Length: 427
Image (cartoon, rainbow, N blue to C red; front, side, top):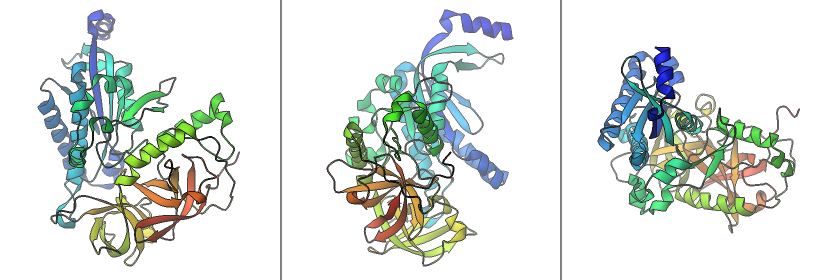
């Protein structure tokens, strides 16, 4: 059998141009450990059924491979547009299934990350008669999926070139009147496992915001930048990141070190463009917890200005450990609202931070504005931009991870006592 496969790999006709899509069920291993099989198995079945239906509907010739907690779908390369739209449809379906009516739990309680790559692959028939593919394009799509935050869709440059951007759309984008070119974010670069050079990719703006890289992927990116000779020009005490960083471990910063603003140039402009796409679309709130049932893992918060009630779960907190330690009825929180004001469903509070607690977020400085943002993210991938006056952060470089104390007004969260976080191991 091995000899037959080696021969198949060597045949020129085994090379095909394909678009490869990977979908990963985020946090599936922990879910299987924490939940009985009767809970997680139907959720996995729902994912398999939903993805299969959407893929076949878009392209009856799409080939689907189930990978435990993930799925690989391959399309002919001239169906790259269909592949991207399937990715959008999957994320929309997962979002809908997470939303229960009138505050109830949804059908599922997980999110997905998606990576898409296009190019030449090696096609072969397995000894059992199935079709499969190998090659760097397959690896790249999988690595992009692994690096993407929950809810994110990453596509490589070849996919972006092969897809017809005029035919890519999402439900929310259509409702907002989003122009076709607005679905594709700026080109980004990230180091991916097995690739010598950082890989260029685009994120698809299917929702209210871009979700960026997983925090561990950003850490690898930062480490590689620090090792690169070009990174030596960065001012001391600052970290330049080409992509967003999720909220990390928090603590009040006592070891305050001054960064320098330095020449921001193109990076500041890019940051401003991302702020317009993300922060401006977020609906920021502050309120008081009116109900919290830790055993059932749900609660409600009432907006202090409008009186609207929002549903939330522990996973909607930026720091879920707060759900068991300090969250209680009467706690003041700041959050971002998701869902539509249609009178049929209780909207959700996500990206939750407790007022008077400390957090860590990534600095964003929109061009020409007197304010900035500190972006945090909950474990489900929901982003939250916390307001700060520009004067309080002008000494820091955009992309720097900063510690801050959470405050609030009627418009939402405010950042106070902003400093660089203490490094645990200065060596």
